[in-house]
Length: 427
Image 1 (spheres, rainbow, N blue to C red):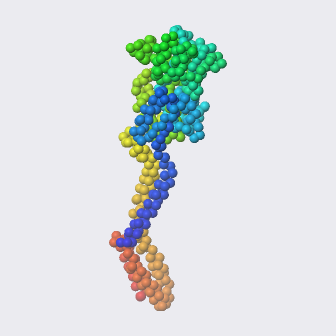
Image 2: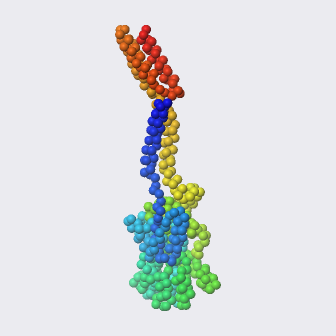
Image 3: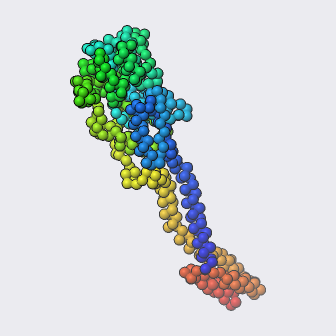
């Protein structure tokens, strides 16, 4: 009984050791769990970037992930924070057209989320609709580090208005709106996905006009591929007040989410769910289903984000809680080698156990063969008696061997073989 138990323990301890060794090796390739806190660079509190990030934070909180918002001056500062070594934030909202892989390497785009039109307000009831007409004027183009400033400088330069050709003021928001309404500046530019308080203030201000890009929108889109022609319908800001009084054509970059290339794939999947939940509906400048979008983006599209945009959430995340799906996906790298090794070992273990039992019997046969050969070579009666005594001792040792009943046949065969040779020694 104890012989069988010892053999069983030896065999299955060996199997367990091999399995544990394989798992220890495979563990090196298991992806780390997703972080519990993620930091996103937004823009000033109260703006569209900050508001949408707050909505994402509420969605991620449902899965136990904290999304911490870091207010900034805008897109350029967001990219700087994302490109430090190590990165100061995990992802950032960035205005389309303010950068790209050449200027900011090592980053990836997760998705484009909404249009952000350029709103250009100028003094005068019927202004020239060309930005070139702003040469020599006082223009508020947003603070340093903002996406508005970067876009304004590029579009002005495209119209031949260089920094030395106009007075470019680093102000924005309500400060710029009040300055234009008061006549202390001649024009101001905003980049915003919706009519903010400063924009509404200027839409209502007498003597101030929103520039209509109707006649040159296609030219802007051709010259600057990150821009899209969009329309602000009449009455969209205030239907009762008929604001604006007629349709206005604007040009718009897209707001996109940019992340460092090392962002955790599970966080990407969770963020994509948040983007879909918050941005797939109808927007002021886009129909339902237009966003989140895979193009155009200024950086390579993250592989996990691209997979989500093509196929939606994976099978596990579609039907299981987030952390359960994460655990299973992380453990695949262990489960596959475990099954690959454990199944053959499980089939090998019973024969190995039987071999362990049988070898307790078969190892005596080398002594049997030696004594049989010695018996054949004996030339005297004394030599025969000595071999016979050794056979008696061998039979006594074998008689003390214990094996399970299922393996008794080889043991009794060994005993009969010893008896047969001993009988030959006595004749």
